[in-house]
Image (cartoon, rainbow, N blue to C red; front, top):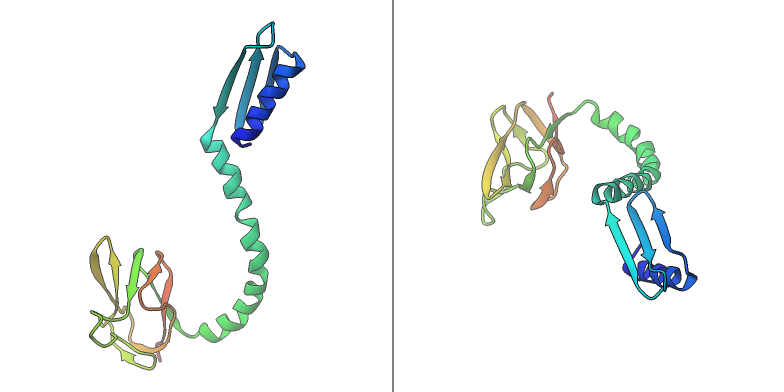
Amino acid sequence: MDIKEIQSLIKFVAKSGASEVKLETDDLKITIRTGATGSSSETTFVQQVPMAQAPMTQMMPPAPTEVAPPAAEAAPAESDDDAKYITIKSPIIGTFYRKPSPDKPSFVEVGATINKGDVLCVIEAMKLFNDIESEVSGKIVKILVDDSSPVEFDQPLFLVDPS
C-alpha cells in the first residue's frame, strides 16, 4: 500500500463518519480515528519492515523455479559429459581474473596441462588479489567464467580432465 492509497483511505473514513477503522495485513497495520465532528482525525501508521521483506523473498523464488525446469532438463545431458571431469570451484567471493595483469598472458588456456599447485586465476576480494591454485593435476577442458566477472563462493570456475 502506497502513501496515496493511505491518504485516500483517510479521506474516505473522515467522510464516512466512522469513529475508528483498523486495517491489518501481513506487512502493515493502520488505525484511523476520527473526532466526533469528523473534521479532525488522528492516524496511526505502523509498517513492519521485516515482515514486508519476507513476502518479497517468498515471491521471488517461484519465477526462477518456473524457468529452472528447462535448464534442469538440459543439465543432465551436460553433466553426463562433465561427470568425468573435476570441477575447480571458487573458494571466495570476488572478481575473477584470468591474467595477473592486463598486459600479461592468461594463467591457463583450454587444453593447457596443469599440475597441483599451479596458479589458475586470481580472485580480487576487498582490493586483495588471491591466487587460486590447482588442487589437481590434469588438462583444462573448459573455463566456465569470463574474465573480470564477479564470482560467488563455491561457483565452478574450471573443468579439469584428470587423466
